[in-house]
Image 1 (spheres, rainbow, N blue to C red):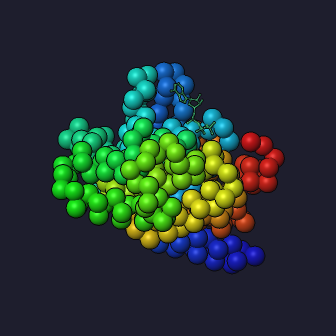
Image 2: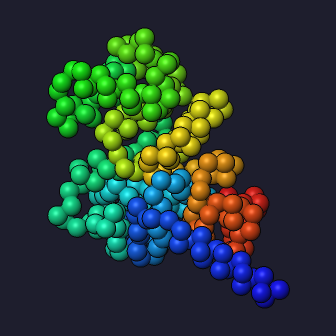
Length: 269
Ligand SMILES: Nc1ncnc2c1ncn2[C@@H]1O[C@H](COP(=O)(O)OP(=O)(O)OP(=O)(O)O)[C@@H](O)[C@H]1O
């Protein structure tokens, strides 16, 4: 019995080491005023894999994902301590500009939020801001990004129509294309399918599987089945703490903490 456990632990430890981290999070704490929303978070996020963040409402999932591109700092009462290292640079280092970070770390939100512009202009917006003016180059970036987001065939004949004319699921894939157009390294997704119907959800889930070949993805989801379907690693958050973080199949089939087991078997949350 002991030997089996030891063997399992060795295998698990080996597995845990078996990736290149894109983010290293060390003792991250965050307060909204007096409310201690993230408590001593410490884990590494792998490159070119999908990492799911799960946990009950209010446990700090959105707060956590928004620390990774420093969006959380837009809330004036936020205070933080600890360290987030992105590709060997501490993102809180004053020398490391937030704009540079957000070029590397793109984000897709819960509700599709296209600009009130044409499909083409939605995707061309970021590259234009980064100084690309040449029409041919922009055309190429727009096509490549829309193809990358698996929506090109649906929109190629209506590129100059308003993005608001697209369905919700198409708008979300357009927002993913807009994110790809700035050629990020990491894509953060905060419940990207919670406002979508099941077919659009499936399309976005398939897309995430394609995108992880080229990008590192962190996805917050309320939906445990979704985390189990599409992620490689899962972190279970509870009351601002990471209770368990391991490869997704282990977390769902053989959780090591009773609270994880209670959550994934629907005993709370
Ligand atoms: N802008 C804010 N100002 C003050 N407190 C906040 C703010 N945003 C979040 N909080 C608090 O921080 C805690 C974590 O919230 P957060 O939105 O990160 O949780 P969550 O797990 O994403 O929840 P949900 O699944 O419901 O979206 C909660 O107690 C919440 O009330």
